[in-house]
Image (cartoon, rainbow, N blue to C red; front, top):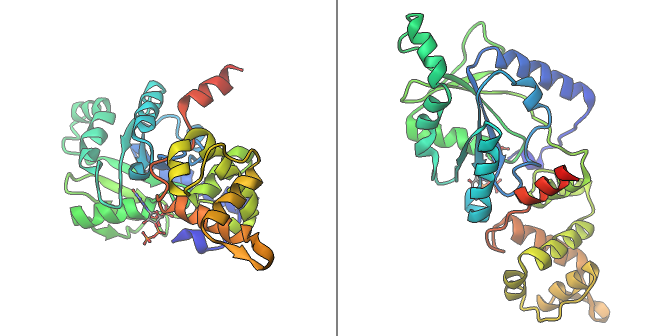
Amino acid sequence: MELNKPIQWFPGHMAKTRRKLKESLSLVDMVIEVIDARIPLSSRNPELDALATDKPRLLIMNKADMADEAATQRWVAYFQKQGYYVLPADCKTGKGLQKLDGIMNEALAEQREIWQHKGMVGRPIHAMVVGIPNVGKSTFINRLAKSAKAKAEDRPGVTRGNQWFTLPSGAQLLDTPGVLWPKFDDQQAALRLAFTGAIRDQILDCEELACDLVLMLSRHYRSSFIARYKLSEPLPETAWELLEEVGRKRGMLIAGGEVDTARAANMLLDEYRGGKLGRITLEHPDDFRKENAE
Ligand code: G4P
């Protein structure tokens, strides 16, 4: 998994990835971007929109099994309104992916008519797959490769490292090499990326992170949060006290009866990431509509 690899977002790395992306874009008809359904905006690459203006865009809202279903539906409507094709999916089980071929055909319906007029009947669709680390890009590709018996080919003349997969429909998928950087310069986005595991904990203070998480849970998912950690109303007011209370309820004490907050923080983040707190979406379209309106 990418998460444990040291990822360094230095400008040289980004410039190289950007160059490779541009090269790959010239080889495809459309772009499939895998995003995390729990953080649909923060898990997007901030520059892809500008790079891929002239190609149909499909967003795979992956890990939909861990996201709040109603929120996912609102996000689908939000993105569709902006002209994206959207497919919520759980790539771990393959749920949702049966609609992939249909959506790809729909996205390129006009283009296919043009190809037909030009006599290019049966020309396969070429699509590239992109995604920031940990959104499940490999899981998406492996799932398709498994169920579709897709074959990976290294083609001569194509950028080294580019891998093409052929689906049973004939569609060709390009797995783009290089690591796509997330929206890490926005503090809120960075926090959400850390909650979901897309940014490594080492970069951030785990206890600070857990404080933000407990605050968010107490505001937006109060009853399931209270039930899971056997808390009682009224909840402590500060995030730090909330974290301590969670640790205390789990018996995470150190000498002198103090709460081992570092352990409690790690446990909370692990449980959130493991989906044990229920289906939680950290970003909601309404928040962004409000922000945009201000
Ligand atoms: P990447 O290539 O984008 O970096 O991500 P990758 O496929 O390695 O997936 C990152 C983690 O997300 C993996 O968990 C993977 O199993 C999980 N994942 C991917 N898609 C889904 C999904 O639709 N639903 C859920 N619930 N999880 C998903 P891991 O803990 O790193 O690996 P493993 O323990 O599953 O092997």
